[in-house]
Length: 218
Image (cartoon, rainbow, N blue to C red):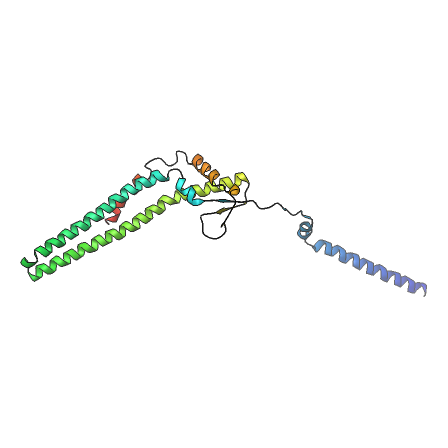
């Protein structure tokens, strides 16, 4: 091989080496750094801590519930008494029409029946309105209590270091059985009593419940 040929061969090898080096450098700049970081990042192998609680027990014992519901029950009874009185009045009017039937003209008899039917429809409407108002009031009653309960569950979960809390009272099959050592119902109840102390005074539901009877008559 002549000196010229040898010089050309060396230059060719050098060019190929430079090309390979350039490819490696380019690949290093394009390779996602996150992928490298993910390879070297340590995996958190700590187990997920799970706890359970019983929402029915909490709701039965939540502070303020009994006072509000007792006031609501009193006004609910008044509304039902009003409907019962309207029904009794309708029956008396029907008895009067029956006793006076022989003395009435056909026109008076027909007018009496139409009047009774109108009163009967009014009583039926009162009953329907009462059922709707009662359900609305119960929803209003439960909503703030449930909000406080959920806030207490979250506070206890964070304080005790749990990542997941399941409700034993919910029939979704997620908490069919659990050891009592992971039941935090008592801790949540303590949190509820602490955070709601003085928050729901006795008779808080009196003003809202007082409108049941008047709404039922609309």
